[in-house]
Amino acid sequence: MTTSIELKYGLNPNQVPAKIFMKDGGALPVTVLSGRPGYINFLDALNGWQLVSELKAATGLPAAASFKHVSPAGAALGLPLSDTLKQAYFVDDLPLSPLACAYAAARGADRMSSYGDWIALSDPCDKETATLIAREVSDGVIAPGYDADALAILRAKRKGGYNVAAIDPAYVPAAQEQKDCFGITFEQGRNALPITEALFANIPTREKFLPPEAKRDLLLALIALKYTQSNSVCYAKDGQLIGVGAGQQSRIHCTRLAGNKADIWYLRRHEKVLGLPFRPDIRRPDRDNVIDQYLGEDPDDVLADGAWQAWFTVRPEPLTPAEKHAWLATQHGVCLGSDAFFPFGDNIERAHRSGVSYIAQPGGSIRDDHVIAACDKYGMVMAFTGMRLFHH
Image 1 (cartoon, rainbow, N blue to C red):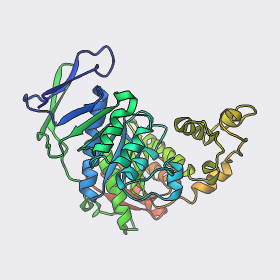
Image 2: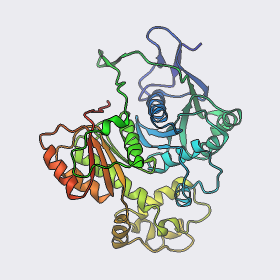
Image 3: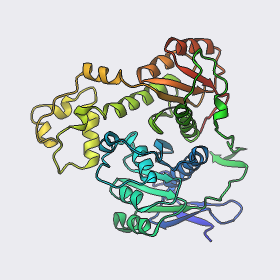
Image 4: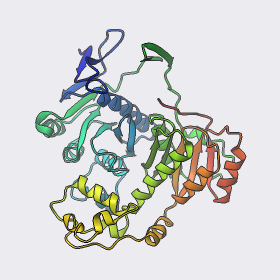
């Protein structure tokens, strides 16, 4: 029985000593099987575990999350991946179980941000998922268990220094939770309200039909928002997050940030991106960085005379602004969730540019009528959930 775990240090190296423990002196529900997780690692692990376990309970599908700095860079359900997505996520050379598909998609939402992530898995880690994790740059993983082959693969990562944690899936936290700030203790009831399809009953827009896939993706977005630093907005499609805007002070900035990430996710599927002639010695993280620059505002960073030779066998053609616009215009059916109400219709205008067709948000703004009118302008379906999902 483990009652406390000593950490390397706290949020920063000067914050020592550091540990996690149960205030009642009882056993921790987590066990370290390899490595030495740190303070931020455990914050990511415990938030990530809550996210994926709620997704599994809500959908019945295995789920995975890629966490960075206490917000998900991505989260996904264990649905089959198309050949195009396998290629875009650099996993077309691997056998993929449903759980491995979930993690490939969770990381694929924003591979730049997922670099050095903490992974959360809803189900016991299998060999296929461990094989995928072993070759990506990440800090650690939490799951309710590990197959023998999977554990051996993960324990060998980083010469035995990779962080592997197991959590008791039967653990239920206390109804009241506490945290300290500046020597003062805060206490509140834990946010245990269930997120179900019943939240989509109040639809004030003219269009009211939510197909099953949209309900699934809206559940995914809302459950992810529950564990994303606020303010936050999530875009989702095909059982995975495709853009997360976290921790912004303005709602429109959340929507823009998440929308820009969703656009990059979709642009990575363009034939010019899939066909980039990378040199065979270029690692996956470097490919992600180069693709981000190639799709960015100044692709000359990697396409200029002489510069391209560091990455490509031949100089690729740029993806022109007109080509980007035309490709993004084919995106549709995207779902969007917001952790609080939209105060202005500008959020809807920005969401429309990224193919959003379905929205779930609490409602309650004095300008709800403007937001509804903006949705009606584009034929969107919007549900007022009545549930705010702030997370700090």
